[in-house]
Every structure is written in structure tokens, then in C-alpha cells.
Amino acid sequence: MSERASLQAPLAQQIFSKRMLICVFTGFASGMPLYVLLNLVPAWLSESGVSLAAIGLFALVGMPYNWKFLWAPLMDRFVPFPLGKRRSWMLIFQVALILAIGAMGLLDPSENLSLVAVFAFAVALFSASQDISIDAYRRELLPDAELGLGNSIHVATYRLSTLVPGSLSLVLADRLPWNLVFLITASFMLLGVLMTSVVNEPRRQLERALGIRDSFSKPFIEYLERKGLRSLLIVQAF
Image (cartoon, rainbow, N blue to C red; front, side):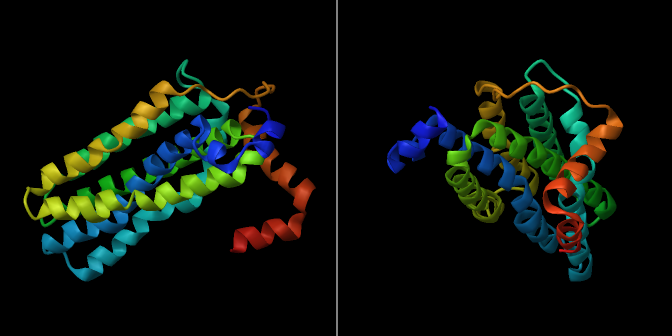
């Protein structure tokens, strides 16, 4: 569907299009690992007898979400598999998240709290990296006319994904051991793997491959040319 046709199509037709369905899956796959860290891990630590002070410090493992722009240029520079630049990175980090979330539940926080923190940081790192590839994929998939709707659907399902680690997993924890709870929770990331396996890489104009240096500097230079230094400083301060 062309951009003009997208503008003229009825809203219901736009919502139930293939591109919007993809946004449902990207939102779920993107949000689920974050809510594992925000909802499931604190409940697990609390039941395991970890102090509130230590649980509070686990908020620091979310730092990769704030600093992911530092390695985003590297992911934009390299194509690890023939699946395409975006799908390759998505698949790598979705599989990594399944393994990291599942393995974390095999630990005993009362005896291996430091190792639990390492796995939690790994989940945050893999999740933030998955977000880089998913956001790039969604931007290249959606025409400008559908960006608002597509992003809204992505964010809505991102929020709804909390129902798995924030509700279902906690209900299961009353009936099952924690290792099974984490394995079941990790298995929901298979929806992201399925989506990545069946969708096509977005079509985009091929650009000359940039060197490592330009991969880091060009985005900032382009932003400065469009918005100016004052805007950049305000964004970074925020």
C-alpha cells in the first residue's frame, strides 16, 4: 500500500493490516523483558529473603536502556546473518533473552545474588539491544502516514506485555517452583522469534556502507544540522 493509499484507507483497514499486526508482535517482544526486570525479578527476590535495599539496587541493571545509543551505530553497521540487518539482530537478541531469562530462574538469590545481578544486567542489555533493532525495523517498515498508528499499537502492546511477568508469572509462582516460572515466562519470547522468522526485511534505499568512525559521528552531525546544538544539549540533559 502506497503512502497516499495509506492516508486514504479507512482506519479499520489500516489497523487490521499486516504492518499493524507486526507492530503488535514487536511491541510484545520489546516490552516483555523489561517487565520481567520490573515485576517478576523483585517479587522473586523478595520471596527469597533478599533485603529491600538490595532489591532497590537492582534498578541499576536497567542502565543499558539509557545508554543503548552508544552501540546502536555498530548494529547499524554490521549484518551478522543473511536474514537482513534488522531481522538478524532481532533474532540474536530474542534467542539470547530466552536463554538469559530461563537461566536466571535456575539460580538461588539467597546464595548467588551477585550472579543473579549479572543475569539481570544481561537481560537488560539484550532487551535494550533488541529495542534498537526493533525500532529501526518498525521505522523502515511503516510509511510516514502510518507511523503514528503503528507506534501507538506498538506502545499499547508493549504495555500489555506486563500481563505475562506481572500477572501470569506471579500466579504461577503460587503453584510452581521459580525455575519453571522463569522457563515459562522465557518461552513467551518465542512469539518474537516466530515473528522475526516469518516477516520480510523492510525495503529501503541501499546506502554506502559507513566506516566505524562515520557510523558514530554522522547521526550526531545530521541531528546538529537539522536541530542545532541547543536542541541536542536539551535532549541529552533530559
